[in-house]
Image (cartoon, each protein chain N blue to C red):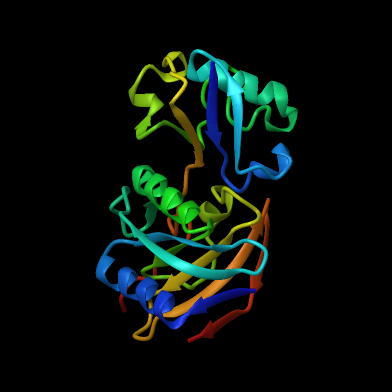
Length: 134
Length: 101
């Protein structure tokens, strides 16, 4: 289960909307065992593409250090799909770096953003509940 | 000389759950070889079969990507820290983008 605060949820969706027409991306830090996200790190999409994303590695390093200093770890990544469902693409699955991470998709295809979260291990994709908390 | 190595979550289970380990080495390559020597489960996850940095891993010496330094031959000092991070990428490129009607 992924647990998001309202602030993290809003920050994530806002970053995706600002990134249009390209895909946007970012990292989430929190507790690996509970799925509680404490910090959202919007990052630059180095691919600068409407179909691809690459988290800027230098921003990843900074986020990782900041998260560790706060007692958290990077536990997931979010990115937008600008014209498709909030479901992992074959590219997302092939390049998912960590089966312990949460993979959050923000679909901007429709007027209201759709946020869904998945666990990806090998070729297996499993959707998980997303809970919002104050 | 001892060098501190920071591990990402995906690699920690192969190092007894440690977030940070200390290994010996005078270069980044030597340090990473010491790392996989001490934790065999990490073999092939940082350095590939050809002896190069794995394509989907970014390795930093302090603030610098070692690919932009001297790669695995980059010398390290005792106060240096190595950070290993997974490359994070993807996208919807394999899915058909609906065309406007």
